[in-house]
Amino acid sequence: MWSFPSYPELDPAPPSFAFNDSGSKEIGHFSFLQLSTGHASPHDVQVDTYSGLLDQNVEELQGHIQNWDASHSRSYPTIPSGSFHVGLLRLLFVEMDVYYQGTGGRFKPPIPTRICNWLNQQFSVPPVFLGHLARGVIGGTGYTANALFRKFDSEGNVKGLEGFFSRTAVWFLHDLQTGASTYVIVDCPLHIRDRILSIATGKNPEKLLQPLFLDVLVVDGIGWSLADLIDNSRDAIVEYELSQNTSVDTSSGIRALHRLSQTWHVISGDLSNLEERLQYLLKLRSEYYAASEVLHENISRKISESGCGIEDSVEFLLARTRGWKRWAENYNERTKIQINLFFNLSTQADNRTNLEIARLTGDIAVDTQKDSSSMITMAAVTMFFLPGTFVSALFSMVFFNIDFGPNGESIFSVSNKLWYFAVVTVPLTLAVFIVWLAWKRQRIAKKDITKGGSILQ
Image (cartoon, rainbow, N blue to C red):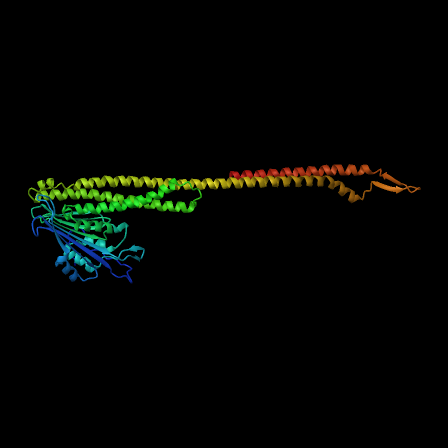
């Protein structure tokens, strides 16, 4: 069972989670950095560093850290007298190297139990924080909240501050009585870790001994990571805005813009988290200095003389973050405008296509009407001659005859019954036309009634 259950109102034991870790191997490494004062003289800073793999057993890890190799230590007589600083700063960077797919999403290998036990026993890292690490979830609920817990002595004074904050898993413990600060940072971005180590091994490592200076470094590093992402995404949206190429595939363009809009939403969420963390640091700073002034005499003078602008730095970072957040929201709106523009251009192209189809359909209708008029004319001519032909053929009427005279000359004669043909044919032809016109009018009327009914429906 882990010791140091700091928060009785919370479950001291981390929850159990089942991971699909078949075939996975625990691979990770750690870097330990310690800055301390008062070895050779009260103003000397001694820097100790050590790195190793997490596959060592707990005894080896603890032995290496407790027994420093002299080659890893350096002293810097650089702290001015009267300055306000912590006497001991311990930083532990823990990095899990393997990422793998689990059921339902992408996971980091959870911190091994033996490493969690070691962190709890060696650095008093609480189970609440370790339980969060044990989940190994990337994003979403994988981010813990900002937490700050105060520790009191027998007289009711705050003797220590402990907590952790989100996005980058950072746990800290500030012992205000001894002036010692301990940090455990899990999966710290490489550029932030290198920046911290370069300061520790550079000419002015005493900067890290300023209270909460490390917190500001971490937050500033996260901010610049988001700045790079903002700049890259901004270049993408500006390229769309300046592009005059109308031949871009609409479907692929809209998909790319939707992905870009999703990126802006993620950036805005990260900037909101960063803004919340900076406000949290302001609260932490107030608690830290207020409690230090109660525990130590003349601490107010040291704070004022040290010139530590932590509050001013955090205020600046807060203003910068809010500015970046406004720009991220601006770029997101501009991305939505580009999406709407693509939709409008696509709609206009569809309308042009529909107009072209309508024009072609009209031309086809005109040609069809011309063909129909020709057919009607042919039908009318046929109806005009058909009754007479029918009557003549039916009654075998012969009205014209050519005979030969006695001298062999041809004689043309017309039958005196020709008027019979006219009397029968003319009324019959008129009757055919009347029936045809009546049938045509009735058909048009039925078509209009059917069309009107479909419109009403």
